[in-house]
Image (tube, rainbow, N blue to C red; front, top):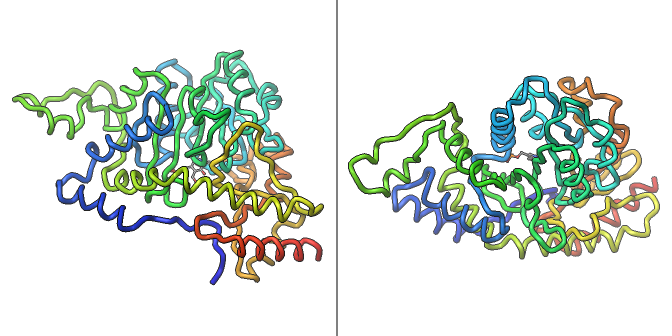
Length: 376
Ligand SMILES: Cc1ncc(COP(=O)(O)O)c(C=O)c1O
């Protein structure tokens, strides 16, 4: 049996009970459990608004579409983003005919505020900040850069369910924060996400746009009495981006265990750190001060990463890489050479197994094996 990078831990009986409720009620779509998970998410994070989606990717697109149309941004206007992310963060910019401009990362593998400043031009409209692995990096400083330059801040919090900064759940200082509840995330479903606008009117608009622009969802029409419940209006063209009750049912169960699971992830990270801290050939990616990370990832940096990864596979240990420098992809190759730190990090980073099934003994096995391999 190999030690996998990610293995979701579904509380199966509880999930089945929640799903059964949907099936018995005859309501699997938008509304019902999706409303419940939005309320629970607001309670959990303290964020004022939350709308349940079919994924984080659609949320990133929706956010950019909404800001672009609200502020009349033009095609070709620029959004500063990181090259060290899953492609969704950058694809979303292209979906709206705007241009991803890459800024470099710092030692936290998050956007460097200094490099962001260098990349701002007259056409810059927004920043997408990715809290990689649950780390906040220098997010506070990026909030200040946005305020100084009047830029919209979108937080791609795909890895950040449960991350707290200065004791408060992340998302409060961004114009829009988008979480992922995809299959291997800390709050796992199969595919879903949550979009949290700071502004009430944007939240209301997002709800309509996620349901094709229709101004009254089917569930609201079903629970309302009266002759006109079939009557709705369509004010602008929207998308089919909303989440459904089956995903919400699974998510509600995952949410109950999120803090407990994240505490265990932090324990795993501590065991890794204790075992690796003195090894000069293995560099642990630090977590920012005042950040209680969700610990979606435990990342290290090593020389000859590809050989190390292959050698670990030989020992049935399956680490991952988060991520390949996006400017190495043909689509984003115009940015090659603009972010040297991200480029070198991309060749050195390794994410070690991180999930509820990993034990202390396995951490010892992984770290002992790793130490032997890097010496060779
Ligand atoms: C940093 C980052 N952003 C966005 C996404 C997209 O999330 P989803 O799969 O929910 O669309 C992911 C998923 O892996 C991610 O890691």
